[in-house]
Image: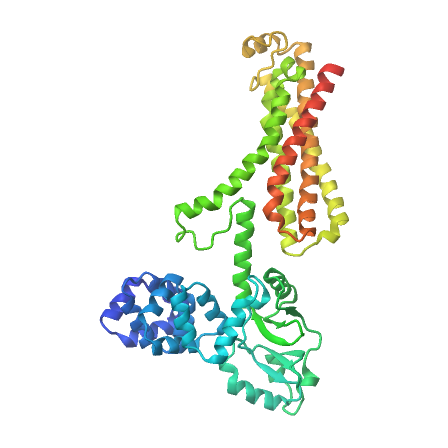
Length: 484
């Protein structure tokens, strides 16, 4: 039966009873990630070592890559050099580099001591590439074929060395100077005639990245061109590695996590949520809260000035609508900024498409703001006539509900209610339009400066929209109640 499940308790029982046959069978029918999660909960590291001694290296190499960093650390510390060398020898270099980055210095030394001189040089080179670049996530275990080989010769070479490579589904064709001259899919090779030459079959229109290309850009290229793997070239345009689609899945998850954290104003976690201490969590949250608190000072300043304005003293009900104005503007801008950040992240558009995007969003903002204008006018009028908010037009210090009961059907009440509704509704129209306009300009502007728009766009949007909405409110209310 395929895709069986295995629990930690079942695995421990098999280890304690030395049921080697069943343990090996489990590795054939249970996904490696599920076995790794069960092993992570085993407290006795000797039992974990027993599994690695019992199961074939072709399984344990993948298993080791899936284990939690803490489990890897305990396992390396408990193993002999020869046992450690067996695991390392079976791992792909890019997976081994990821493991080394999470280990303390003394264990890194043990790992590097048990690899060949050539492989150690490769690991050190990968560790020295800039973080989050193509060079830092590439693998050096890939298959290259000379462009002068025949199909039969190429297939023979794949059979000879293909098992030790990360992927054979995309073949990379080089010339004698190790310049990448083409790519070839495995299925095209298999169905070709045996005496055909690779240079006649290969695809010369291929996509590559530089070792310093950002990993997010690599992910976008693999997605755009539907690739299984992409070639990585050094600054001399020589082929030095490849990035496979399974590595890109990890990148996509990492980038998505960072974007969500940035939108929520939290510094991304380095470890998993459950492995992060409350103190570390607090350190991630506090800086953004302090920054937003400082930015909120501008809104506080404007609100303080509003209290002193004659129009708000004369018509105090206007103050009741301030939270609605700020919330609606923030919500309208938040919708747009989410679309902008998503579109920039997926390369649906770039800062160069500013005019196209701004035209589309201006038209959208006009439609949305117009609907808000009509609905809010009717809604706020209803609120005043039903007493949800009290409109006292004669005695600002008296009980609003009592006055409402006496005057709600008078022409003075109607005129005043309409003027209040119109003032707030027109301000909402302006606030929504401004919010959507700013929500387009900010991310595109930040992206044009080569920065991540998710980090700074949302806090700036909130501050700008709140301040402009309150200033607009003051101007419109002044015109409505003192000049008209």
